[in-house]
Amino acid sequence: MWKIAVGFAIFAGLALFVISKGGDSVDMTGEKHGSEAVHAPAPAAAAPAEAPAAPAAAAPAAPAAKP
Image (cartoon, rainbow, N blue to C red; front, side):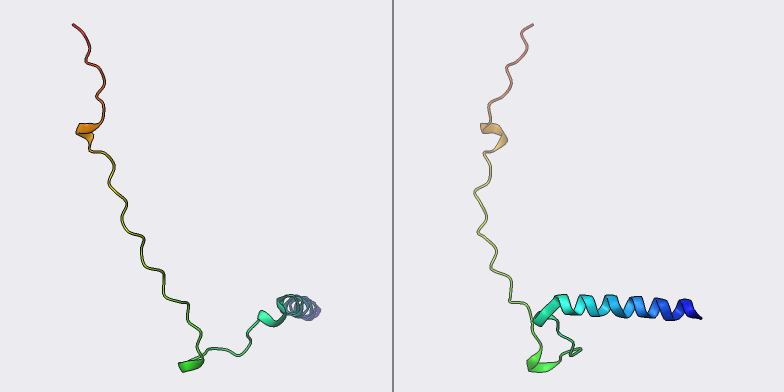
């Protein structure tokens, strides 16, 4: 029984430590719905496609082996 009490005390101390380190950035209000919900901004538009690499036919070929 005493192990449960010690475990609870350690867990409570750890929880208070984590909350105190979070400062003002910890939101303890639970789930948000409606207008107060914070959503991430929409991702930026994808960058335009880069020019494709030179076609394989334009790449220099390895010299042919001489017979």
